[in-house]
Length: 93
Image 1: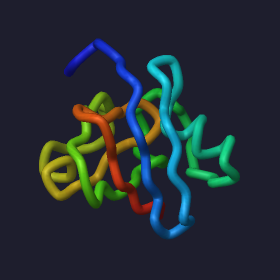
Image 2: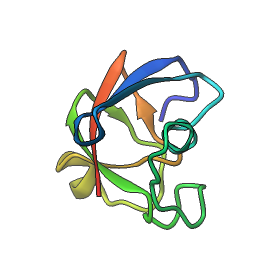
Image 3: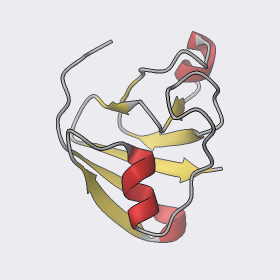
């Protein structure tokens, strides 16, 4: 897991929304600022409540909730995970 944070772009086509996640923010936090509620419980990467589907981009998985197989299928925890590159396109469940 990478411990360095960088800003990245998130696109959520179902909501027709794009936003930037700053190094000190989470996807969940910024989504809420844009009126998109991603369900959460722990907000610490342990429960898996905030799982979203990665449609484009590569996730930097920082959770402990999902198994590697789920990561490989494109699932990520939006409360702690970030983008490895400059952007992610997500589907909210």
